[in-house]
Structures are given as structure tokens and as C-alpha cells.
Image 1 (cartoon, helix red, strand yellow):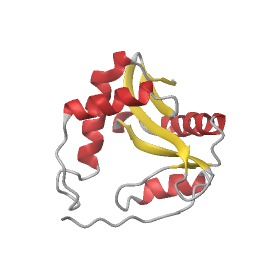
Image 2 (cartoon, rainbow, N blue to C red):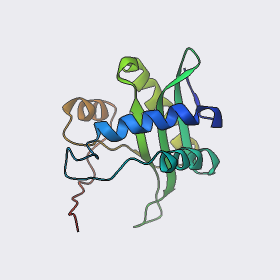
Image 3 (cartoon, rainbow, N blue to C red):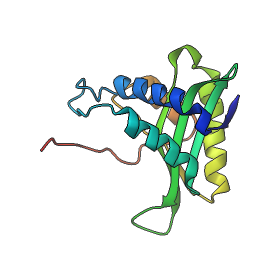
Image 4 (cartoon, rainbow, N blue to C red):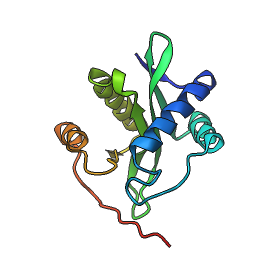
Length: 150
């Protein structure tokens, strides 16, 4: 079941965000290194509960959070077009599959309710399965970001 997140999910959400951080390679696997901070992750999660234009969705399996999708809706900086942007999306690998589709359905419905013209999702790295999922759902590649350590 996909439901809105709540403060009671915070501890589990932080664990999911930690797993997402590790899988993204932020601990050195891809050259974009920054430490995971539990307090920061907790603030990130709670901030998505409190903001009017923020989305916090939880994949609930038997009463426990097994996935989280955080997003923000805002105007694009280059013009008067509202879009939703995923902050982070992670589902415990043991609970993926159809639940990913349900989470995307709920996210896209949330974005549409906020009059967003587009819903954006990010893919860390070159995972072809993630790209296939997004393309099948009608997403298209819009930007590619490059980072340089300073």
C-alpha cells in the first residue's frame, strides 16, 4: 500500500535513505563523495512532511515502511512552468516490482493535483533498468548533469 509518510516512519525512512545513499555510490563508488548523516537525513524526511509543496510517500508492507519517495513541486527557474522533482526515491530491494509502479502512480497523481506540467525523476548512474522503467512510463531525458570536485 502506498500512503503519505508520517513522523512515526522517520527512523525507518532514515535507514532507507542510508541504503539509497550507499547504492548511489555517494560513499566513493562514483567519485561524488559525501558522508551520510543520520540527523541530516531525518531533517530531509521531516521537511518533506511539513512543506505545502512537498511530497512524502511511503510503501507500507505489513505496517512497515519499505520504500520512500520524496519530491518537491515548484516553478521551473527558467519559466512559468510548474514541475515536480524527485528528491529521493528508494525501495528496499526485497519489495520492488509492482510496488515501484504504484509509487510512481501516486507521485504522478500528487504532481498533477498541484498543477505540475511535468513530473521529474532522476537516475543515479547508468542503470538500464531504471531508464527503461522511466521511458516506458513516458518520461524522457531532459538534462544531464556533470559534477567536478573542487
